[in-house]
Length: 118
Image 1 (cartoon, one colour):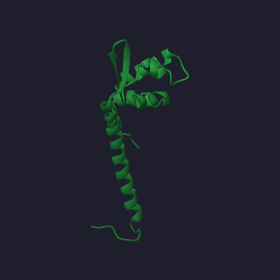
Image 2 (tube, one colour):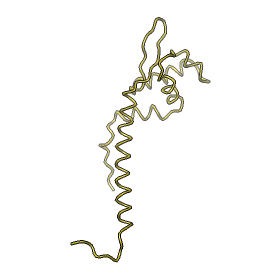
Image 3 (cartoon, helix red, strand yellow):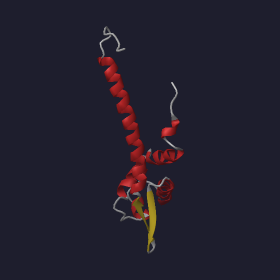
Image 4 (spheres, one colour):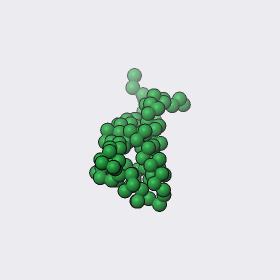
C-alpha cells in the first residue's frame, strides 16, 4: 500500500511537532487571551525562564504564537490562524477516514451471495 504524503506539506510537521509537547500546548492555551509575558508564563511551569523561552520560540517558529512588545514586556498571544491551519489538516484527515469507513461498511453490508450488478 502506498501512502500519499502530499496531504501534509512539510509546514505541518513544524506545527504538529510544536503541539506534540504538553507544555507548549498549555502555553498556546494560556496565550489565547494574550495577557501574559514570557516571565509570567514561566511562573506556571517547574522549569527555568530560558526553557520557557525556548518553548515559546518553537511555537513562534511554527506560527502558533506571536510575541508583541508592550513596554518592557513581550506579551505572548496565540495566533489563531496557525491553529486554523492545523485544524484544516485534521478536517481533511477526518473526511478521508470517514469516507474509508463508509466504503468498508458498505462492503461489509453487501450480501456475498448476491450477484454483482452488470
